[in-house]
Image (cartoon, rainbow, N blue to C red; front, side):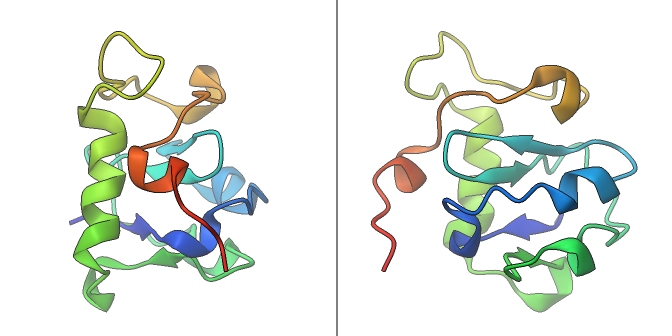
Length: 110
């Protein structure tokens, strides 16, 4: 299992984690960032960089809802897209994807 970004990242697109990732596996949706589980090498470089503690290591038993949500961002056809994102090989060249998973899109931050 790769690192997972949870609900604390919603509407908190700081970007420090992106710069620290040596394999560029963190992608930006409209309201949240997502870690591609197929591209993540489990190095942990992003973990201390997150200012809102939204990134969880695989050993920290992330909530299965957020692990599934991170995977869904890459494997499911998202609103406004014709095909799933898949593994494009890097978040920086991909840029902001412009959509989120249904869970994040409908999330009301308290």
